[in-house]
Image (cartoon, rainbow, N blue to C red; front, side, top):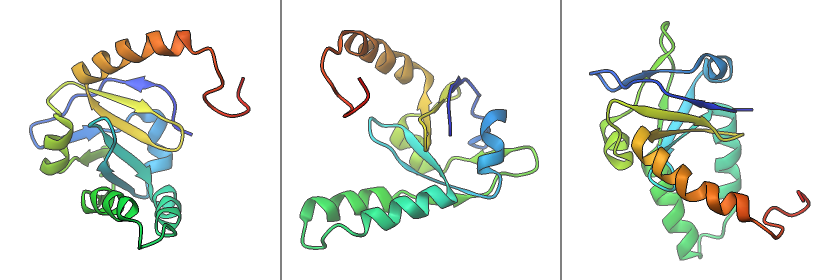
Length: 143
């Protein structure tokens, strides 16, 4: 499970060093793709395969499912970390998420999310108030 927030820097070649706590789970390969809220999702290979299996069960007759699948998979790229635990974020994904030098890499349970540091701080500030004020059951069975 991926947990925590880390602040690596993007180097001049578009690479980041994976946070130490994420390395074992991502060492044998990962898949990066467009995430919602303009971040980059990073999945361990096995998790991505499981997710793809679920997505492809959606009916091909559903336009919404087709649209989601196209956007999600067309931006996907498989990577394997190098010996220094670095991965390259492709230019198209860097542009999609507005990634510059300063990043926020967060653990989101089954995936990692890579955010522009400023965009993450803005998102977090907006969401923390709503999080604190949640008065109803948002996630069934949690509260």
